Image (cartoon, rainbow, N blue to C red; front, side, top):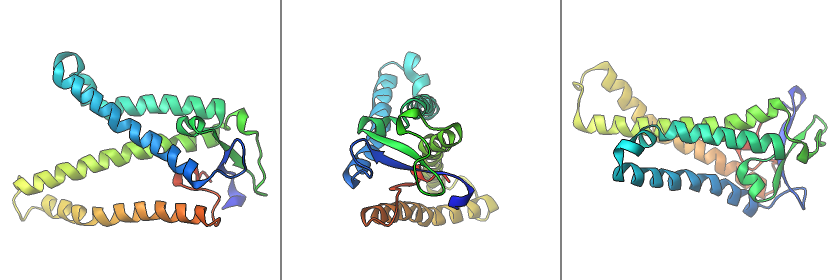
Length: 196
């Protein structure tokens, strides 16, 4: 697939390849920010629903919009996501010959920038929405809102049965990618950097 386009890898400012500790730390940073902000908004909304209820009801969309603006800014100015820049990592556009095509400090080209934004912002948003859908379907299934023989109930029961396996495959692929990175078999440590 390399002949069809460039791909992006992450590099440390001091070294060609960042350590697994650096990449796991930067992955964990944004994963921790969302629940922390969500808790703050929930406390504010419970203390004053008239003023902060809107933020609680639309938290996912507001967070995604702010995350989009933040990531787009950092990727275009520093060639790194917010968390990568925090840990001194940069994304480098690699060509067909696996040589850097552009300086890491020059910002990502538009095509790679928007692919990166899709993996950093859009996919996590869709995953959160899917998890909320699964949770509401489980609650609905427990209270048996639909008659047992309805097609809708059969469909979402099949969906609920399949979801843990799909989620496990997704997380397993992510783990395999990290293991391949640790063993030196891959240049990318996660799906966030696979932008071919």
